[in-house]
Image (cartoon, rainbow, N blue to C red; front, side):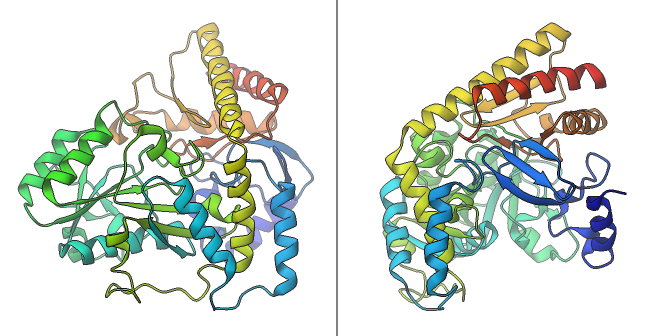
Length: 427
């Protein structure tokens, strides 16, 4: 029995399912999870000493690779002054200033401790600002584990949602409406059926949580127009895409300004962190400036702020990072497509910048219904075939993968080779 297997057996007696976040349990792909001991650059190392090229990068934040030296130095300097104060610090101000400078729509920002906190707070602010209760979200978009977001689709575009997890009340579900991603008509029907009741529309502008799914041309602008017409706030959940797809995130890349934006991951350099921000008049309803209450003892933690500042300053001062990420993403996905042509396969690859997903389906994937046509047992075999060849992927078909500039052209070529060999093995 490997060390990872021993740790997992022990963990199952101590932690629900043996893991602290469900996807880590490998249930979607079979086998047991690897327990990771360390990471550096493009590699992670497990407790048994195995090395893997990894394409998750802590679900997005390690855009510069693991243990990036300027971030490490910033953390080492910060910990000399204690770990937390529960009081304002200079670095919170500097972080807010940098986020406002980099993200086009953000005029004021509030730090929190996770992406889930950020999305929950943003929705509360939207409700407080508009005086309305209902929320529109999209099937397959994940915004953390807040009650309002764990809602499945009903039997039609104007059907109320039903709870998708025990513990979520029916009353909460009644205030959450769902629509298919990339379907403006469905959104318009929901708005018409709930006139003057909808506070916000929230979405991942580029989805990462049903695999990488891109907005179709005109979709984001159409949402912006519908929200403007109906007094609804548009919320972009850029916890994954913020500072990854461009310095200003997806909203910069697509030229669409949301009213509120949620952020995370990269702004902590990989440490636990989140933020939400937006128009000044909206953010001024947040306590203590306004009546909408939100608080957090560890918000703006000085260690997380130090790591995030080092990360964001580097990205802000080195725009060539994004050109390199584009090169890497294109090289990898072009290689995958060439291999599929060679093997007579027609699986779908969605790709934008440093985000991509290989979907085990021949159907184009533009929404969650499309994504669910994937051959999940086949993906499980593919995942393990890649792992056997030293490539660590997200253990779920329904997750985007994230590249970092720590990858070299040679390592990308190694991933392309492994992909081809893995496909040969499992098809």
